[in-house]
Image 1 (tube, rainbow, N blue to C red):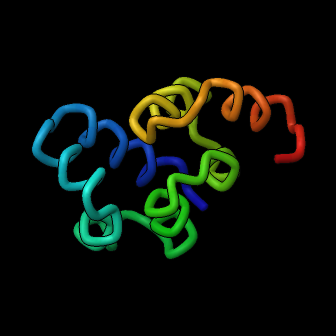
Image 2: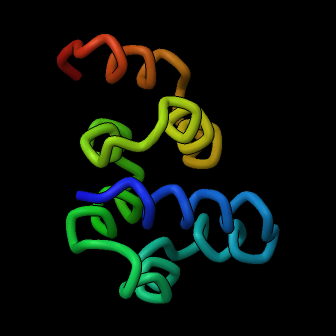
Length: 87
């Protein structure tokens, strides 16, 4: 997995309220738009809002924090991922 495509997606998600609204409503359709920049595993992680899978893309920890906020996940889930704890 590459960090660039995931980081680019999260960056654009944060810059566009319309994209964020569509992502919250239907993550899969938004993921299709970025098919050229993301691997299947990355798209699946984003569509499922899976922080643990995203951590394997080697994105910067700051982007994991941003993803946690965008995905409306509890901060404790992010800390478990960062600390390598089981779900």
